[in-house]
Image 1: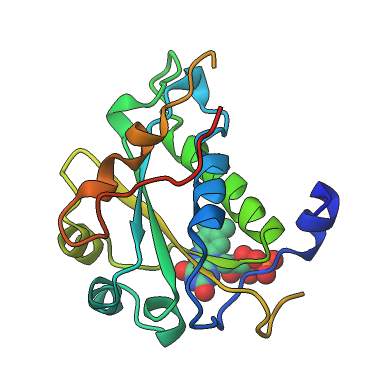
Image 2: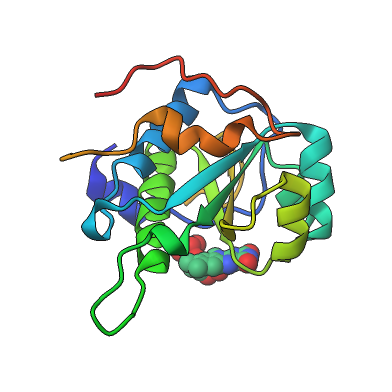
Length: 184
Ligand SMILES: Cc1cc2nc3c(=O)[nH]c(=O)nc-3n(C[C@H](O)[C@H](O)[C@H](O)COP(=O)(O)O)c2cc1C
């Protein structure tokens, strides 16, 4: 889909089909996040991809709407503030970096015919525990993705996929995450 058309038609989706998201689509939208610009190219974030029904159900305690924890995929973006670039006056840019990456991700998802919804109103301590997120990372944003067709639709050096997929190998998520697509 044309970029402007994607930007125009993207909406936050809060009703998801049960169909699984195809691996190649998931690979491409994660890669879109990986390619996002970050301050000083620090790429201070990791993503946790949750497809396992039991794990998703546990995330209900973090954010209770059913459409959230029953979505085919939940992606948790985790910020790494200590890795982020800071301005001379100490202002850190991690939230900006993560937001840009997630915007890449949601636009890529829309272009793939998938719906997403940012979720900031979750309980980070529950997410940390359920997903076994280490202390140096901060769960910042969750997003859900779905199959298409339901209502509401209106580097210099980049991290390699394995680096971005760091957290995928964590306990209880679906692992190891293996990309079926090779990216440049
Ligand atoms: C940083 C951020 C946090 C958000 N948090 C939530 C949330 O916790 N729950 C929710 O249902 N929607 C959340 N949203 C979605 C917004 O409500 C939505 O983007 C906004 O109402 C505009 O609608 P649209 O995305 O369909 O254009 C969030 C959006 C952003 C950008």
